[in-house]
Image (cartoon, rainbow, N blue to C red; front, side):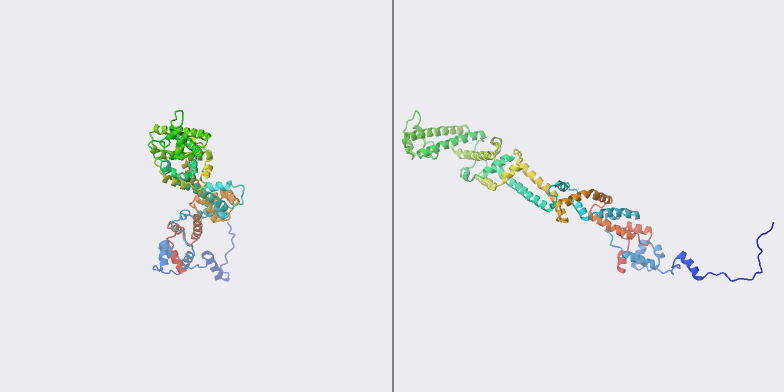
Length: 494
């Protein structure tokens, strides 16, 4: 087999040596190890240095020992530039536990922030208050109206409602001693209040009180009222014709006149009248006066019969007439108020324990005008409702209105000139705002201050993740909520 390789010329003369330029060799080293291709001589750590001691506690002695002075200085500088972290108690520490949490949360915050911040604040202020939203949606006639002017008008209405409730409370307190413990209807209250404003001329007739040994029905009081009015009418006629005021005389004093009348007359009628200080001028006057006296005696007899029927005495008459007079005032008020007296008579029966001071206090409490008109209006035609329903409805209305008014005040505090048209636009945007808000709520950011805290923490964590430290060291930062980082030492040395 023939060898085809050229023969080695073992005797060939030597040529120049191959050499590589030193700079080229250095470039090779730089390509592999960088500029600092030579490790610095090891320097013994000063473990008494508070910063070094803190770094050892955080990173471990071995890791710190491997760090060059430049690395330690770089870490110190970066730590000194970290902003103040959120409080260790903040929820934000629990929602960022790894690097890929940052982007997800940053996107949620950015979505929330991209809305007009006034709109977001207005939405936040409305919260779960359905009433304020309904009021905003319901406005269609004057969308350019400011919420502040609307609230001012509502507060004026609220003031009237409050005054009504307070007045009713005051009147109800005065009802108890007058009528006893009972629930009066709105109708009875309107009648009582109306009558109470007309009692000035009646006080002297009510001063005797209302104590009777027996309770009389409204029907019986009605009969007595009728008899009493007939007695007064007959007495007025007698006074006009003869000049005698029969109401000033007792039954005994009038006996002479009584015996001078009728088929069995035994006395001189004209003489009997003159004896009481009166005169009978003509025959016609004699006839009319006789008839008037006969009517008077008949009505007085019927009145005495009722007294006897209920075991009442002449001493009870002033109190009996006090009941009749109050009933008459109530009936007149009912007629003017167009309220059926029969439906409220039992409610307005005067307590036998009532005294003149109770009447005076009641009259004083109802003296100011306006109450009956308000009660009639709020009853909406249903006057048989209990009066305390008015108070309850008023108090409930006040509480309900105040609930949305507080929210309204919060909205005007954000923007004093906010209009209904602006607020309706906020409501239109709310689904998108809510989507961003829900994304943040999912990580515990429920309020604007929570979002602010989360945003601060995001900024802080993006810098913490950029520190020249190992993943384990970063985890230690998260686990200790930054307490392991010597932030104050670094800031003091910076």
